Image 1 (cartoon, rainbow, N blue to C red):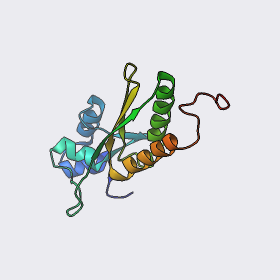
Image 2: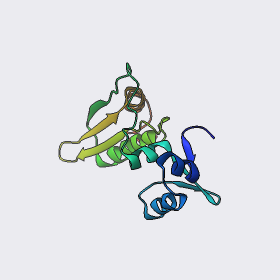
Image 3: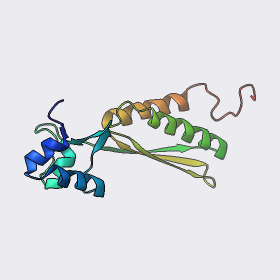
Length: 151
């Protein structure tokens, strides 16, 4: 097992505690642990949270970046807005990196026939989602024309 997961015995030894004390911390929720079979495993981050040690931040030289985008689509009725919102949310839910999820909100203004899509997340995921929206809005997919053959 790597250095990122510890047994109850290893945690007790590292902290200078009795094994029963560590198990008590786990039972009361003071220390998070994953039960594997009949044994607990404690992640390094959970051990650090218990002891108050700071968790390591992003690597030096690799700044964290988040993109916020607002997409406005005019000329959208309720049905098209619902279809576009479903497509966008499906694209978000199939995003490739669960460690860096996208957060998306959609709003439709029926009075103005306008839809806004607010996207927050990493640059790659946001760019992928914007490409998807662009392809749908500019493709021949009948999103705004109703069902195929209604022309």
